[in-house]
Length: 447
Image (cartoon, rainbow, N blue to C red; front, side, top):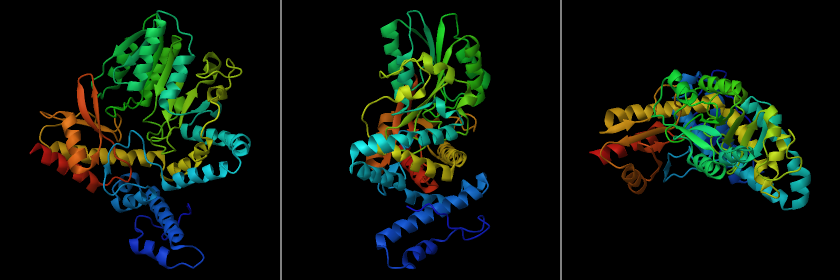
């Protein structure tokens, strides 16, 4: 699909690109291409022009331009019959990313070993460089993985643990990470020291204290989740930096789980001060499913064993963590198209749009839905697009069942510690009308 921006006015605040222009693009063309190709081309141009207008508006104005965000939905194959409000789990890929993936697959099958090992694997360095630009970090410290879980497990499995080592982590960390930590504890005799935060947390000093007060002479590792998948709780970058700086002064390794922050919050990985950072690219970068990245400080690379055996396992080359044998490398090629589309919107605009949508429906629900309880902050420093709620007197499983079966609204539940809630995570193209439907559905349930 074309990514050319069609500019029709020098004043984006006045130019709303009326829908009739879209149909002119389809009908007012030559005869060298099929109608389908013309339609696809016009759709892509309409999407790109809408993004161009949004990015030229002031952020607070851009957030409310529902017509432009609706047109961006044309870039995706979204269901007209199902309202997907669980985009925090896995985000959809833009159509152009899906098509690139298929095209690379077809090309690879013309001569698999040639394209896989002599062509495609050479492009990884370009992908690594572009991801480093997004993460504002050294590309020599980035390894491509399959997801956040694999990135975390690479670090956990690569450390020479000894009995009595202690790890500080939270009961609100991601479930797969907790499974890994419990196995490390059972296998090596490592002690897990838990913090039990209650969201929403809106006090930097309190958050910092929760971690630092657990440190003792046996502490070897601190695990920090930047955006909690359960509730959308954000630990601000400056708080993470203070924790990591203090840990480094005591030779304590720090890892940040950035599964829900990368591509959504505007920060630099190296500015966090952590030793390792793990994330998934199929969340807010909207890359092909099953890709993530691992950041490891340059002076730590040699110390960590590769998750899978590799030549020169103790050297400081980040590529040693990418030794996996034959895999679906054609899909990796489409990460570049995902980055292109993500950059056309931008991390800041994407994050602010999602925060706007979360604030919109949460504030409305607080006024209109009986028994509504919000477990996510409405302050910008402590939350973005994900929100967790519950309804007094109604089990969350029953709320989810009602929304799914009766209203065709897809969402997910979060049950951990004292929390039993429903998580809502819209996408940028989710509209206020969509969220009004969610509110009406909850009102119906609670009447």
